[in-house]
Amino acid sequence: MTIDWFALVVVALATLVSALVVVGSYGLGVRLLAVAADAAGPRQPLVRSTAYLCFGVCAAAVLYGIYLIVPAFH
Amino acid sequence: MLNLISAFLSTEVAKTISGGLIREGEGGIQIDPAMIFAGLIGAVVWNVTTWLLGLPSSSSHALFGGLIGAAIVGGGFAVINYGVVVSKVLLPAVLAPLIAGTVAYLGTKLAYRITTRKGQVASPKRGGFRYGQIFSSSLVALAHGTNDAQTTMGVITLVLVAGGFQTAGSGPEFWVVAACGLAIAIGTYSGGWRIMRTMGRGLTEVKPAPGFAAESSTASAILASSHLGFALSTTQVASGSAVGSGLGRKGAQVRWSTARRIAVAWLLTLPAAALVGALAAFVAHLGIAGIIIDTVAGALIILVMFLVSRRNQVGHHNAISELDHAGEIVKIKSKKKKKKPQQVGVAE
Image 1: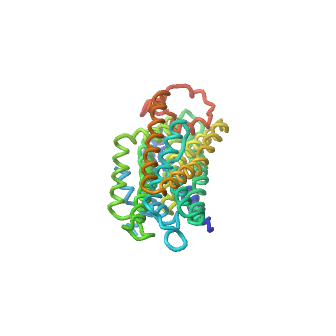
Image 2: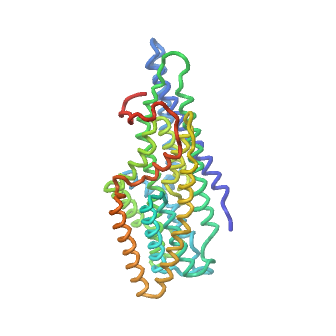
Image 3: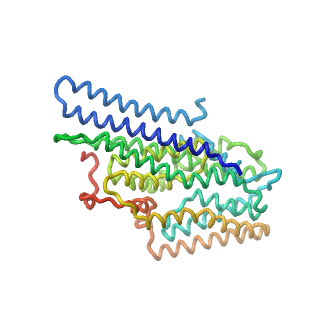
């Protein structure tokens, strides 16, 4: 009986990293939007675009994850 | 829609079921359709039983249990590929909810840590997570398709192999993949939407930020597992995440008695379904008459349970949803707890 412990570790790490990247970047985006709403003056557009950049990172992470699991793309 | 697409994405889980679980050919047994039939009866009977008792259980595990039980009766204990069973079904069943729960816990902590703004009057505006949830729940639907549709594909392929239409150990055919994806998608639209709603709601009505964290970790855990051919239960992983994200909030407590009840039901599913499957296989091997007996007995049991459930009024309107169970595990101390669910779009 052989148990593939390595596969389990891979699943655990992949889950951890991907979920934290998605949640982290999205959370940062949410926060920066909130900051942008309060901030006045010239900093506002900068903060806001950084927030959208964060959402972009989040979306890219999700798409990359899907790309990784679909054999048709390789 | 996503369910349909996801069925095409990967076939690793289907291969686990059709190729890995039961040893075929040399040193194994010839699987015949009667055996698979018996396995399915075992799975269905156990599923209806747990549904009647209001116990949360995994239909995928019931399916494996039924098939394993039937195969053991057909060819003895040696025909089961225990390595595959343990490393692709049992261990993931225990670990995946734990992993998803831990990650959801960390994710919730992270989401709160990032969005908490110190001092001042500034509001954290966590309502933004609500829009994120639209995407994260779509991801859960996608993940659901990659795992559960494949379970169906695996069984159909197994039947084809058993019937001699396909060589042993080969992957599912294209039309099987298409049919399963379509079936799951149709099922989701026609009645399965209720399950999806429970899965979504069980998490989202908590709060947007932990809900988003929980759904992200559910989706990534299931997708990662599907990729490696682990056949796990979507519900179990989602429950694990729900508990984890609940714990990530301040002042949360675990109701261990509820947790224990759910865990027992999960653990019982596989052996119990195996038992019923074994019994059905034993009868089915008597020949045509045995198969007829099986069908009639299975139908009778389901009919009786249906009637009993009607009498007890355990209809869909008050059926105990599996995630509600999971939600019960975590008791959150909060002043706002008893308030009605917030309206969509209102920022906290």
